[in-house]
Every structure is written in C-alpha cells, then in structure tokens.
Image 1: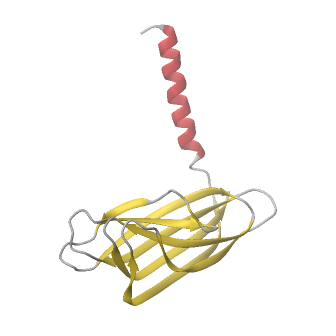
Image 2: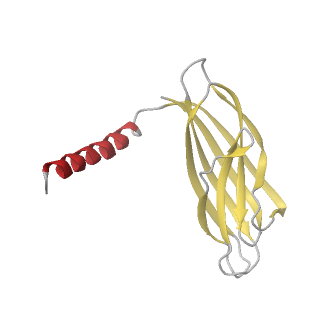
Length: 157
C-alpha cells in the first residue's frame, strides 16, 4: 500500500473515532415530560399517513444560549388489519414537524392481537426557549393505537 493511501486510511479512522467520541459527551437532565393515554376504541391510523398520538406537549429548553438535546422514549400498543407486511413506524414531531428519525419497529400481528412497539429517538442542537413535541405513528396498511406512553427528556450538554 502506498503512503498516500495509508495516510488517507489513517485520517478516515481518526475521523470515525473522533465522531464517536463527540457523541459520548456528558449531558445533564433538565426536565422530564410524561405523556400517557388510552384510546378505548382505538385511534385509527390511516394507511401510509403520519398520525399524531396524544396531545401536543409543551417543553422548554432552558437558558438563553447553548442548545438542548431531546430524547423521546415511545411505547405504543397497536392492532390492525391482518395483512402480512403491515409495518409500523414511530417518530416524534418537534414544533409540528416530524424529525425524520422514524424507526420501523415491526409488523402489526396478522391474527388481530395487540402488540407493543417501542422506540428511542434523540434530537440534538435544539435552540433555547419554548417548543412543542408530539408522538406520531405510521403504518403501511393502517392500524389502531390503544395504549401509548412517551417520555420526553430535555438535556443540556
């Protein structure tokens, strides 16, 4: 291997290691916001449509400078059409917009039974001040949400 290729390889490894170290910095928990609920008849999630679950939650990124990190820990109980491949995704909206962090969490059971899905999402570099957050769910063929719980945690580096 020539010197140029070796140098490029060393630089690439250092960049990867440096990126990993940057994400492992200490953060202090500022506040936790809990949102739980139950839809007795089920909240209908139309096919291939992002649908809000639960109310909008007001949160605060404290201070006048710096940024915050928001961690959303979701647990969603779902049932739906008994079609194979009916996958479910969970995301959260920040200030009314999905964060494109959606995670495909599994498939709705084909026998009509309930299944609980969970996801953890982290959004960093949130500006100080007031914000809103809300859970959203998407399904290929549609589904019904029954129980849900989301914990939104706000951290400062």
